[in-house]
Length: 279
Figure 1 (spheres, rainbow, N blue to C red):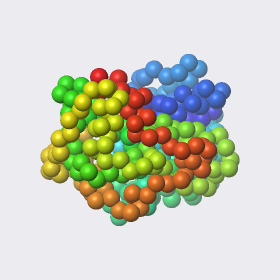
Figure 2 (tube, helix red, strand yellow; figure 1 turned 120 degrees about the vertical axis):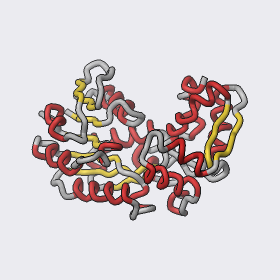
Figure 3 (cartoon, rainbow, N blue to C red; figure 1 turned 180 degrees about the horizontal axis):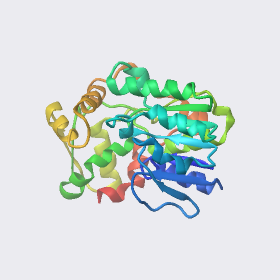
């Protein structure tokens, strides 16, 4: 049995579906009640309180660990999640980390994630670490403005990074959970090409078959919007990358193709599959 945390999100949902379609027994974990594929067990648990995860871990052989905000919650102890998993008999852990651990290792959020990577490495379980860059699905931040005003508002309109489709992350995670060949690997996951916010707006317009205007925000305007849903420090970290990506953050990684045997999906492909969110 495989436990998928963050199972209702942009990565966890397609991962849960892929594992179920592969005939695996899956337990989907999320903070709130949610629909899951037929045959999948669902457990409500908050990873900021690791004891609540124990019912999900009973009988598990593998764990996909996506902590997201739980990593930084007050009083959170992500190392305890790993310890409880291995104590319950989990022998394989696939951790969703972040590319920033390698490219910008000294920020508070990356220090915490690197510490968790080290915990996973030392856990005694077989492990794989996934370090994605920016997500294509972050474009959903623009969904309401595109639906209502046909406008994308973002900073740094002509500065891009190779954003990755979360469906590709999910496919890589599934491969790592099911195949011993990926044990001990650290995979950096990006899309196939650098794309700017202005280019993303054009791809969304193409998917809609309708013009979408691009409006460039100042950094301060962008931060004000972002801090409604994330800590200010994390907003600044994100804006630093978006405004001035390093050569390592501009690099297109070969790792998706190494694992899946195909190139990663483009942002245009993501936009076409998710166009209903923008209509």
